[in-house]
Image 1 (cartoon, one colour):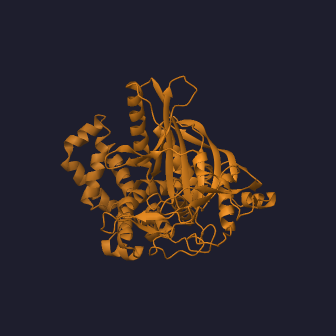
Image 2: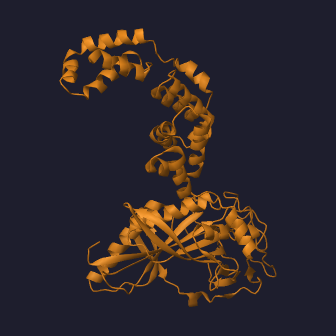
Image 3: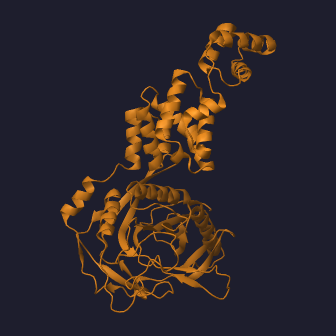
Amino acid sequence: MSVQYEMVIGLEVHAQLLTKTKLFCPCSTEFGKPPNTNTCPVCLGLPGVLPVLNKKTVEFAVRAGLATHCEIRGRSVFARKNYFYPDLPKGYQISQYELPLCEKGYLDISVDGKTKRVGLTRIHMEEDAGKLVHDYGHADQSHVDLNRAGVPLIEIVSEPDMRSPGEAIAYLKKLRDILVYLEICDGNMEEGSFRCDANVSIRPVGQEKFGTRAELKNINSFRFVEKAIEYEVQRQEALLKDGKTVIQETRLYDPDKGITASMRSKEEAMDYRYFPDPDLLPLIVEPAFVEEIRKNLPELANEKSARFQSAYALPAYDADVLTSDKAIANHWEAAVKLAPGVEPKKVSNFYTSHLLKLQKEIPETFERAKPEMVADVLGRVEKGSLNFGMAKEIFDAVAAGGGDVEKIIAEKGFVQVSDTGAIEEIVDKVLAENPDNVALYKSGKDKVFGFLVGQTMKALAGKANPKIVNEILKKKLS
C-alpha cells in the first residue's frame, strides 16, 4: 500500500458458545452429528412454537463482556433480524440490535513492541443459521443441514481502530485466547466456531472521514484474514487511482486464487427490518448475577504470563509462548510443581525447544506425555542419569505411541556414562586425533570447543554426561 492512503479495519467476530444445548431449545449443539438430527420444532421454525432462553448463554456472554472491559447492560432486548436464506427456516434470526448485552469495551494488543487499544462497540447474543452443503455429487443441487440452526453465538464488534493486517491478526489472536481461557468457545476456526468478518476501507492520509468499506465475510483462518485484507486494500487503492469509486458491498475471499469477489450489495440495518421479538421478554441481568460471574473469572493469558514471570522467573518470551495455549500452560506448570529440583527455566526450555515442535508433527503429544512423565525424565537429567538428547528421544517415543518411560529407557539402553575414568580415556583419544583443532582452541578460537565436545559425545554414542565431558575437556585443554 502506498503512503498516500491509510487502511481502516474493523472486525466482527462470531464465536460459538460451548453450551450443551441451543440458544432457545434443548437440542444438542454437538458438532459432526448426521445432518438434521439435532433439530426440533423450535430450531426448525415450525408454526406455533415459542423460544425459551438458555441461561448458560447469558452467563457466557457476560463472562466475555467482563473479560473485555465492557459495560454490562442491566436490560437488553432480543430482536428479529429479517432476511431469507435457505438455511434460516424462520425467515428471521433472533439477535440483539439497539439494546445489546455488552457495550463499550476494549482490548489492548501488542504489535512490533508497541501497545495499542482497540475499542469494542458491543457484544451481543444471537442464534446461528444452518448450513448449505454442496458436495453430494449433484452440481445443480444443494442440501441443507439445520443442526447448526439455533446454536448460540456471541457477536463481538470492534471499533474501526486497526490500521494494518498485523494489528487485525493480533486483535483476533488476543480475542480468541480470551474466549478459550474463559472456556466459553473452543476457538476452532476450521469448524466455524470462531469466524471473522472484516470491514475494510482506505482513506487519504490525514483525512478524518472514513472511505467506503467492503465487508469480507466468514474468513476461517488467521492467514486468510491477513491475505484477504491485503488484497482488498490493494483492490480499493487501484480503483481510486484509476478515478473509480469503491462500492459498499459484501465480498468473499477465495483462498485458492488469493482474491476477493463480490457476493452482494451491503445491507444496512434498515434492510433487516429489526424489531423487538414479541415472543421474548426483555432480558434483565441483576448486578448480583454479574458480580458473581466477575468473582469467578479464570486467570487469563496475560495474567498467567505475568505470574509465570514473577513466580517462576521466566523471561517474558517464554511465558508468552507457554500461555498462548491454556492446556499447555497448565501442563507446564503441573510438570514444574512435580519436579521441584529442576529449574522452571530448564523445564520451559524443554517445552519450547522440543515438546511444542513435536506437537506440530504429532497432535497427541501432550495427551500422551503426561506432566509427571516430563517431571520424571527432567529430574533424571538433573541428576545426571540421562541427558537432554536422551530426554528428547524418550518423548519422541512417548508421543509416537505412548508408553512407559522406564520401558523406553530400557529398550533404548539409555544409561548415561558418568564414569570420569571412561570419559577421560575418550577425551584423550579425541584430542590426540584432532591436534589442529586443539591448536586452534589454544590460539583463542573458542568455537572449536563445541566441535571437540561433539566428537567426544559421538564416541560415547551420546551417552556421556555433557557436564562431565565439558569439565574434563576444559581441564585437559588448559
